[in-house]
Length: 389
Image 1 (cartoon, helix red, strand yellow):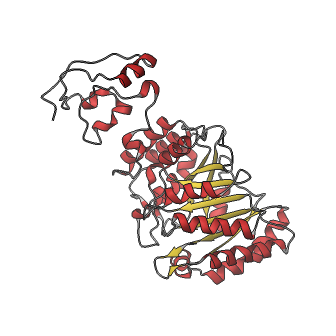
Image 2: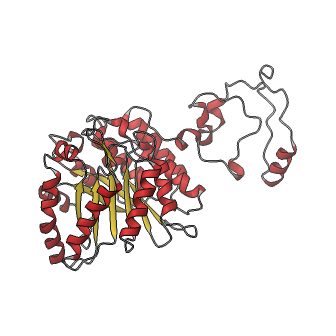
Image 3: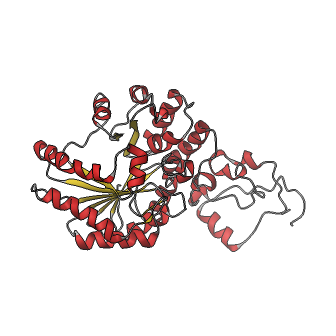
């Protein structure tokens, strides 16, 4: 993020479409098409892209050719590329591709799921098993000389099988990890909170973050992985932006077109993610300078729809960003009804050439005179059709 408004946290976008998105889409999508999308995302100005995951192809066949994707794509200078691993075997496979992949070996990480059912469905291990790993993970981190760490909780706000969790439960599991790290001389400044089952709400996120900052005032980084199956994730992310201060960095996972989903949570593709293009548009509307080419990102969203073979879930890719300056709409444009016709913002007026034009004369107003004085444009008077409805 190149510019941050006063009293607001720095915001870092982590693009998850190639991992979170592709893992729930068709196994028939070719490596060539995945590479095309990854290259398109790389050219948008996004700084953090997750390229996929090194997991069992038996259970996630969509990731069976992750090595080929990484070998064939074109890394962009300055972009940090990462990949998910869940076990030592996955880490070995990933390490064969460093670089272009980056591994944060100077920062430790412990984690635990609040929902024992979810983690057992996902990894065949339970919460007790995750907690039992903490000492070894911390020992290894200390041995590498790390001085900071992420403490992570997942399935944090609720479970489709066991219901909601409380702030007390969340703070307890974050605190136990803090204590384990501090016992070895490291005080983590980073908290990661995941919500694979879309239980986040704005009020719950606000409450949790306020409790985290109160209990652990030294925390400086908060990373939210919010699924949007119930339409709350963009609101929750915005509340997080308003809850944190200028001393904080907020990491938000998003996905091009909003594609994403978890096969283990019971909602599949309906789980979704925050659409990257919508979140960039939101940040810029709030005064952030993102350094992202929003129009290039919108084109990547349309490419993603073409590749996956169905409509995705973003808004700004359909309606376009708020127009300003010379991008303001033609005041004499015809009636626009379909999503295809609405694409005039990126494809030009030819997409609505056949649409009805009820007004026989150009629309005149003082507002128009003021706009055209600043942004002169040609007034079209042809192709009028019918009477005003």
